[in-house]
Image (cartoon, rainbow, N blue to C red; front, side, top):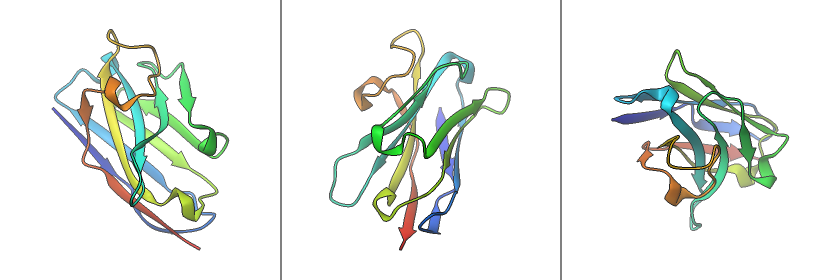
Length: 126
């Protein structure tokens, strides 16, 4: 079982990168997916989550209206489109998965998730 995140890098403030996370070893459509981030010296925090079929999403307040989570079950991939990036968005971004039968549709707590990717660093330069 593996989650492989990609798409990070150095981005200028105001930029719009898209992160991807591709799953292997699971039946992807059976899993709710989430994105979390951890900035230097801070605790990991919730960013966004999406239910098994993409019909329900949830966002942390500071990214609402700027970030968009989506998924393509045929490609076993979840995306995080990030727009209007700010320096405070600098962090390692992690994707995570949890079997949909265990939790609410769009879980926000990191403890709810069973499977984690390795993280991809997004650095926003001002």
